[in-house]
Amino acid sequence: MRLRVLLTGAGGLLGKKISQIFSTSHEVIGVYNTSKPEGNYVMSDLSKLDNVRKIVSEIKPDVVIHAAALTNVDKCEEDKGLAKLLNVDVTREIAKSSNQHGSLLVYVSTDYVFDGVKGNYREEDEPNPINFYGLTKLQGEREVMENSSSFIIARTSTPYGSNPASEKDNFALWLIKKLKNNEKVNVVTDQITSPTLNTSFALMLKELIESYKRYNFIIHLTDASQVSRYEFSVKLAEVFESNKELITPTTMSEIKWKAKRPKNSSLNVEKANNVLKVNRPLNLIEALKILKSEIIDLNV
Ligand SMILES: NC(=O)c1ccc[n+]([C@@H]2O[C@H](COP(=O)([O-])OP(=O)(O)OC[C@H]3O[C@@H](n4cnc5c(N)ncnc54)[C@H](OP(=O)(O)O)[C@@H]3O)[C@@H](O)[C@H]2O)c1
Image (cartoon, rainbow, N blue to C red; front, side, top):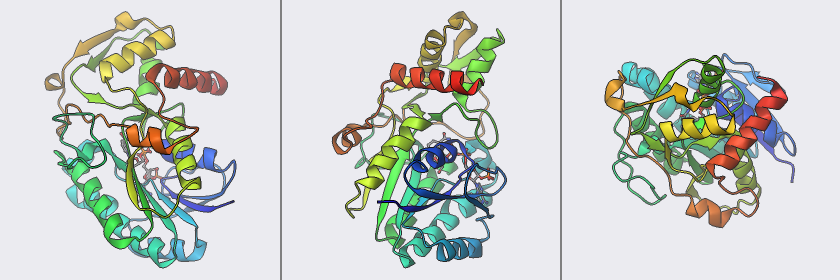
């Protein structure tokens, strides 16, 4: 069935790839604020909550994928008012509006809802965010559950991909460019996540939505490997045949971040592996090989 999909954050790291992959079989209307995406889109500042109501009622989507957020973790700590507005209030409005129009709401959430003490978190584990970004995303999840009768909460982790994000290169692109220019980089060994290729996330999400049976649920949609940024970087250097000696291990205590980061916010993907039949979480090497082929195609 061809679905009418309203996608917020369409010019972002995940949004761009979701738009590209969903457009192969669905009608996608992307919402952007400052980063204009390709294809069919509307420009709208969602922080003006009337705009949210207007867009959903005009477009009447079958599905709303809400990927817009204030994703800069340190900025969320510095400007809590803006973080709450974008990540909580906008999400509440999206949930109410999509519910009114009978749309399925997909809320893209994060591993940062967890404190990172134990890692390998399952969907039913108790969230306990340790920074304001994580808190607002958790509150966003709660707004979705309270205000929408048809939803999927898809938590992902450390997305990367061949397309630059709205504001800056993602970690993988940044690293590829540094290694290509023979520049040394310091990368932390004590922060473990479940890095996820945006292509993999978008394919898993598409399959999930196409097989959705009106159960409301949370699902961890990440790739399968749980690694530190350092291990990720070394594997990337190997796959890209770059000089891994340029990568120096460091620890989080050496980095001056405004917001605390969870030590191990990796996500368990057993549920995704059970629910998905075709596009399952990839291991790191598989994902990096796809990234490499996309980069060669794009000539980045
Ligand atoms: N990045 C991560 O590490 C990470 C990890 C786990 C989960 N997530 C979640 O995944 C989702 C997508 O993240 P991403 O990495 O793709 O982020 P991103 O590249 O920063 O994209 C976020 C998008 O939000 C949009 N946005 C911000 N303020 C807006 C406003 N006032 N009105 C309309 N749109 C606005 C931006 O649009 P413009 O650029 O057009 O202004 C941007 O395209 C988010 O919900 C995030 O919380 C991210």
